[in-house]
Image (cartoon, rainbow, N blue to C red; front, side, top):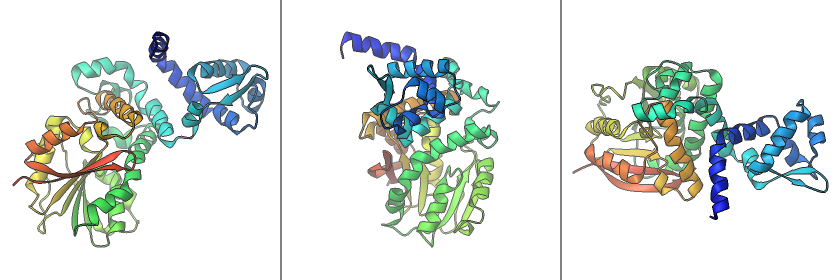
Length: 353
């Protein structure tokens, strides 16, 4: 990188809040889509005619977008065309999910990131309500923010589900499965539809169990799904004991919601209900196991969402962090499956001998 390139990147970072909002509005107000769909590009005047925006608003956004790199202009015809970056901003599903998530959930709260990092508390969450963590308030969050959060959460996990189902079910008999941190029950419903014999117990906060029941009601296999309310942060609350034992304990995008100390506590309680034949499956997007640098970038940025909005003390972990927690909880890593869906890995754990 040359000195000029480094300086431009530094300025891009300094102006990034403005870059973000200008880019978001180019998408929201349909300007990028209009330009993309045009045969030979569009002039500013043509864009004004196709929108309900003033010439001033369009001019400001187009000039900003030229500097950002979303569009280019033909100096002879004054027609704007979309760039590759503009195409990704408009058409890449992950980018669109991240864009909405950052605007609706993170943007205003990030103003107090410094306070959150110093205190180890989600100070940015105050924007939504007076809850100790986002998870207690998720059910009552503003609908637009909740929708964006769920879209972000489900987008990454849902794409991995087809591969994950094969990893969990195809090489073992599974009759009893614990879905830890099961949220709205999407994974539980996938399990009962994939395997006609499995019974799933969703473990989550009581308010999340109610959301899960409402979501699963009337759907195929719902009669084989039950809920168990538990506060994972309360070390006195144990995992339920099953008379027939538990074959699989499943944790998908769950442990990244906790600090390392809390993870060890949760895994230790899971280990207590495991037998020699039980396997614990931890599915996470470990940032050090990503195929592409862009994915690692998104994950390390997501860590700061956990700091400021979610809970104040968790992050997106790497393999070393997770293995350390597993070992401290009396378990060992049996194997790791990589490159599932959008960069997920599944760590398969068993009780230490």
